[in-house]
Image 1 (cartoon, helix red, strand yellow):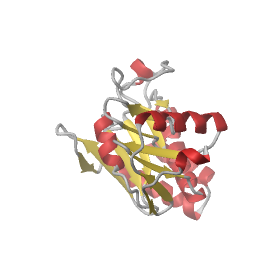
Image 2 (cartoon, helix red, strand yellow):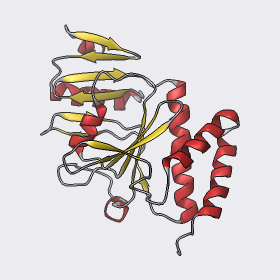
Image 3 (cartoon, helix red, strand yellow):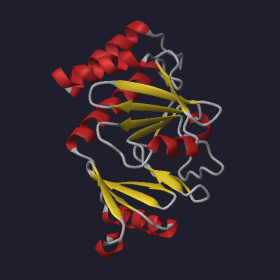
Image 4 (cartoon, helix red, strand yellow):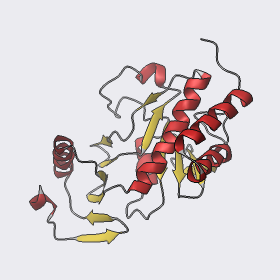
Length: 221
């Protein structure tokens, strides 16, 4: 594995290594090797450039908080969702691929909820991707998400949660209210992420569930 990473052109972003001149076949081999080794490494691929990043405890802590809030809300309101965590989404024809920090099918859950193998050439991309955005990425992950057709991204930088929706031209516009959950304002989610900092994850999730019950009607089973 080590020898495959010894490429002549490389540069360093904060917490990441970027390699140039990487073929699609090598990218797929690295994905397979990491999966086989059980290593949790993020690989972002964009037309020959490969960014390699190992997540920090800060990264994992807050992506987990956001994931728990989304999943708890869906359970409270009986909204079917299909969570796929940090699944690799890629398209060879576009020469692009990445792993979101968390991702969910919401509107497309009826179509995708029982599907084990996803092919973005024919299947829709996840309705929502969550990104920890506290450090600089050398590759433009938003551009890759747009190419793959992800309709909505949430980005958390350690202080603020920002939302973006993909427009008809394939670029992202800032939003205050979620597209996947159109009743939900991002500022309200941000409040409970902040609570997880000053308290605990469990307390933040419980408080969030109480707020959801009081604020939104539950779907009938």
